Length: 272
Image (cartoon, rainbow, N blue to C red; front, side, top):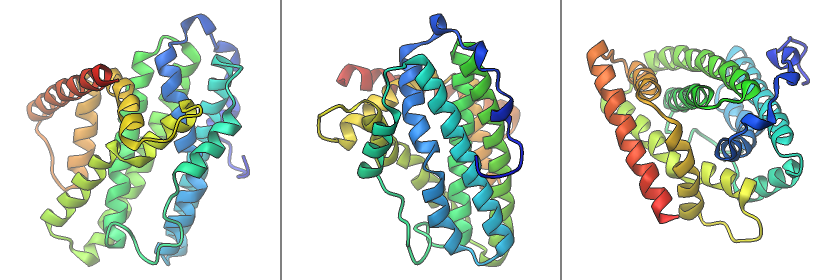
């Protein structure tokens, strides 16, 4: 860790690890997640040039550093759970398969505010994912790491939300345009990045197939969600859109969303 600020990774008690409690499907998710989180420097290289304000650039660099630390923590846990796992080869495979659009002249989302909104969607998903994984696992060290990461992702969400609101005060994006950004970013969960990470972690010698490897990832990832986790994601996303869900509505959305992704998980498992 290159930054001087102390991070919770430095205080983790690695002796908590209990190999008897490792779930192989959860391990597969962590091996993929470690690759995505470690991609922080590439995301910083893409994002920083899009924003001229030094204060925002500094926030983005710190966010990227924390994402990289998450990758370190998850990678270290993965090596404890599977000492034979070649993390470095997986990282090289991932870099060769998926690239962040570094050098883009402008945001792929259409504007600076929309870029921040898309980041809110990502942090909504990651915070709910790590909360779900923390609740699903019985391995104490992984539960602790995922709980810590979930808290970081909520903090990241708030930072991006503040920046979105500030920038949108000038851009004044219509609601339908904001909704398009949100929908598009949610749809990307079945797109290339997670598929590439799962392939890089588990692909062996076969060729990368975005549809096949994406569904293999989602068959496992979707299986850990419960209504309280999908409700959290829905509340965060709608808040970024400027909406507030009443408690009963949020509960209903969480329940229906959980049922929907459980059906998808079953379909993907059957297809695999």
